[in-house]
Length: 291
Image (cartoon, rainbow, N blue to C red; front, top):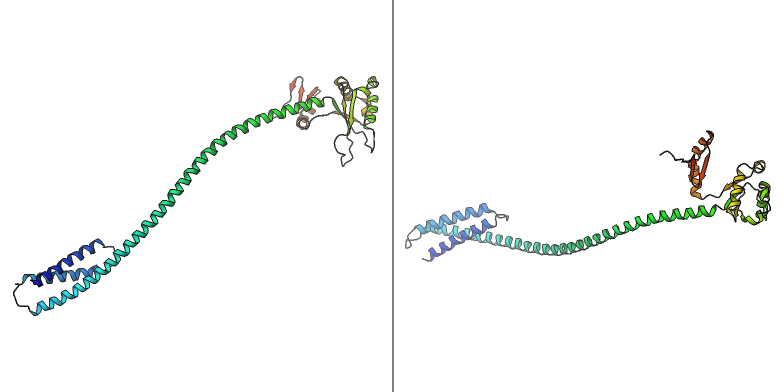
């Protein structure tokens, strides 16, 4: 009876090992050798169970017993190896779980930062839109102020005339020199020039090429315009190689320089050209540059 139980125990161990082998089929265990041993073990057990309990043991039973002992040892060794592999795999899984947990924590923090940055980007986008609107308004305002400033400069300079090509000397009396030229150019108002001429000075720094600088400011537009009209056909200025020009702002000088080819062509055709600030008019029609 004891032999039967022993054989039954061996049989059950074999079945259990077979199940373990099936569950861990991915591990590197020599399955083929174990199956052969299990088949041998099962065959031997079946042969023992098929004999009468009270029969006398034979040499074949002793031989089967030796085989069973060898097979059981091999089986236990395989089970131990398999258990070690399972434990190793389990430890690896635990390590992976820990790594995944740490990664998930970092991912959560990263997600939080990204969300925060996204909110900041939205806030900045709103601010950018507001700033673009303000910049647009400031540009419009700047253009308007610039135009107003230019117009104020133009209006202020309408009392001024430039007297050019007057020789420049150290310690000179610029006002006396200018009044002398104007008296000879417009004798009809020579007695009033001392009163209508306000300020006379050289304009800007002395030029490196030695070209003279001079500007005259009148107290009354009436006399300024009279001198300007007379200067256009003045024989005295031509004989002494002198010139009188308007005191234009830089923008008007640049605009007139661009229009000058059209003005020159119109004058060559005998047309009268009238300048007004940066614009030129022919027969009341404004000259425009071709696009």
